[in-house]
Length: 308
Image (cartoon, rainbow, N blue to C red):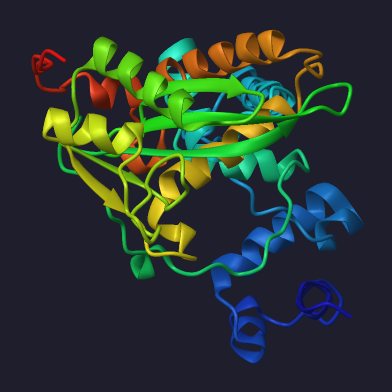
């Protein structure tokens, strides 16, 4: 029997004074009087558990905002784009003029059953980030593999600004060659200026420094001519080029949600569409939720290229 029923029984049936009943059961007299009033008004339902939820929630978001959170999650996920709480909060603020904290977004996503439990991750305090301090201070490059609709293998070459993560050049090739790397680099320099340095792995399309003869390839010759410092990661340590590795992961997740490209030309169209979205409309967590384009906007003026 519940304490509330015992208290009411003691007062109404046993006719014991309220002061004595309150002292015996360790409750306040005011609570006993409220319970008696509820019992006289409601009868047996007075003993049922009552919700402690407040009658009003001034901090609660509107039903429309809650619906937008769910809709944005499905829309962004369907497009193969990031759809975490921080990204959704950014889209709500920038595109719908609705200000909601990421914690609130996460809570409503969980209520809608759209959050999958994940193993405990390393704390962010343990992360060590390496990034150039200014735009055009360092460019990273690498290529990855992608398959066309008919099963033909292709390769995608990317040049990224290390500071802003801005995608300077993203191009599709049957197989990336040294001239492809050089042409993409030159085109990026024409549009964005010459970087102070570059960072790549030790692939032969980027460097021949590990060959016995150590003859320069086209990119190395170009960098030396422009006075650009060439940096290469430690062999077998792709984490050095982590930004391009992460970029390729994001790109492939997006491509997987698109209709399979039948030709390299169609794949290039998809890459151009992704690059525009990635640079202009996708907030980046490492950039304090800025887009890469916004972070790259403070780049220094393009340096004149020496005559060949």
